[in-house]
Amino acid sequence: MWIGVNENTKFALVAPVNKDANPLTNWNNNFSWAYMLGGEDANPFDTKTKELGGKTDSYFRATLLWNDEDTPNLSDMDLHIGFGNARNSDVYYSNKNKNGFELDVDIINPEGIAVENITTDQVSFMKQTFTVSVHTYSKNHPAKGFKVQIKIGDEYLYYHFNKEVTSKKYYPILKFKNGEIVEEYMQPVNSVDNNHLEKVVTVFNSPNYWVQGGNNKGNKHLMFAIDNFTPESKFLGIIPEHLATHLQPHRRVFDTISSNLMVEPTQNAVAGVGKSYTNKKITIPVILKTNRGYISYLIK
Image (tube, rainbow, N blue to C red):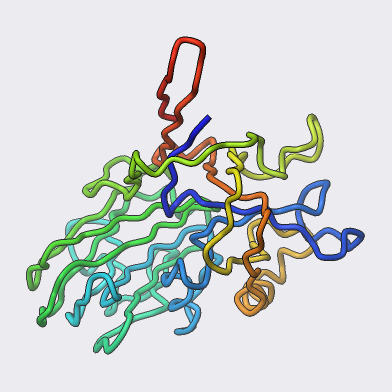
């Protein structure tokens, strides 16, 4: 079996150095996992948001990033969550707290990588109808593009706008209603180079579902371990969403600790490609070799 690889689906299993250490996780083993998007170099969304004092461990998070190395853009851009047609109903720089959502990072004059961040910890607030959008408040040259990361629980979506932006224009990203995405105005980034295929050595469920009929918690992830796959960058060793129930009140502490205790890449790691069973926005191409030739599948 061969599988397509892209930046949004790479993972590595995480285990304690001391195998007898007490579990930090919310299930019956001491194994966890991290997607490479949690890596210090791979995910400037998290790194820059934390640096500026924003929350990264919320249940829902929308993060706007611009002026990075790939898409230099010195414009003043604003992240909005809107609840109607009137802009005064939005969560944005002039109205940072509304309907349970909070803008906790606001950048006005970017000189390097810039982010804005809107979060909520309450699942019930996701039942509202709202739209995530980006507004180009003022345009400077060069002014090419922006990126948006959406976090829902432990799932992530990415949207890239790689064209020149227009001043004073709103760019809608996606719309939520009753906790579900009901409309996407941009396609999520999930492009896979079909020539970049890796050999799979084993397939398994995420560690929180290793015990059949046991204390299974959270979303189940399908994981494909790749032959001789070594992560390219450091990644988070402690994922706040994976913490045991009695440690949940201290999530902010563990979030700070994890950003300073990144896991170093190692050879012979159990790593590869994975996705949540519930996240239909991420697709993974698979090629199987059979006695009748090669068969291609797209796992959703």
